[in-house]
Every structure is written in C-alpha cells, then in structure tokens.
Length: 101
Image (cartoon, rainbow, N blue to C red; front, side, top):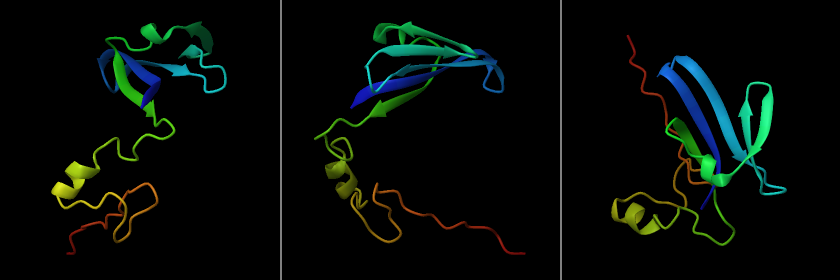
C-alpha cells in the first residue's frame, strides 16, 4: 500500500479548529497541500505531520486485497471474500438493532 493523502487538524478539539489536506496527485505523483482556497506543491516528507488526523492509502496493483490479513481473518472465522450480504470489497451489511417499544 502507498500513502496517497493525509487529513490534518489544528486546534483544541475535533469540533473546533482548522482542517487541511495533503494529497498525492495520481496523474503526476506530486504532492499538494490544500488549505482553504490555497493550494501549493509540497513533498511526501512533509505530508505526515503531528496534526495528521486521517491517513489514506492506495492499494498497489498486485498487492493482497486485505493487505495480507486473510490468514488472520480466517483464524477468527471472518470470511474475507464473501458471505451473506457482503459486497465486492468484503464489507458486510449490518442490520440495525433498534429496540422496539
């Protein structure tokens, strides 16, 4: 897997402060920093800061679908490649467990 984006947060809480993003362009492989209406070129080394909030990864061609986790998933009786209500990416639909009154 390859890092392709970082969401960063600056501020006292998740509900307040300022969010920015640093993203690798898939066409030219250059890194860009987005801060409100300002966009500027940056480097991969500057992408992950102490304010990193979310990291986004791209699965590389030929890499394992679950990042090599198939064995662990099977050991825990989780079917990585299907099952009831499972989409093509392996996500299972979960029914709501609302309490009836």
